[in-house]
Image 1 (cartoon, each protein chain N blue to C red):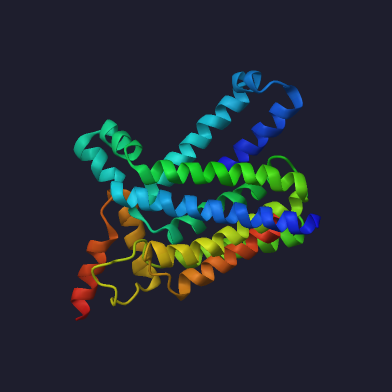
Image 2 (cartoon, chains in turn brown, blue):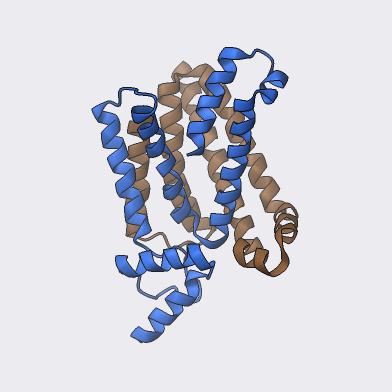
Length: 126
Length: 144
């Protein structure tokens, strides 16, 4: 039963952080290239357009949800399971979500990279 | 890079301070917060000109750096399994760095860069902030 709670927590973490990453990436694509915007209109224009973006706030909220569900999951399961499982599944989930929702061209090169990094993170944190 | 500072900070604050209000006043925690904000700002900046599936593997180099700092600065034991993990992450990042940084929506059928060109384009974007799309449009134009 404890295992079910732990894996449920891990799934919530992965879901929330993937949603957060997707929303933040979408927000920054809507803002556009920060460097050119900064050169053209100055730092405050960049700050204003980032903080004026609703996707940015939704993304930050999702990240906060991910953080607090990590704290919950850590109270149910071992850190050596929860941390690497959540981190590496987030990489895989993000590759799927970026393809579906951001229409990024996730070619074989990027799939291999996502899988390698996910495996590496699992080994490092485990 | 950041996670290293943060983790150090977190441990130090837990050992030395009990109150969370006092913790913010701790210079280590303050440095940690500033570094985390810096990380978030550069992450957002990178996302503004590159794909999420390009930026994420690159940020995972932080894990590698953390392990190297643990080994050489803190003199911790790094097990063979962790060295394999470091190798896998580095390999993955190298793999994705060879490709284009940004999906070109105007030319979805355009062929991917070979690795040398891709790296050049990525560096170009990093330096000038010029979108990689232009580069890709040019290259596909040449091939047609």
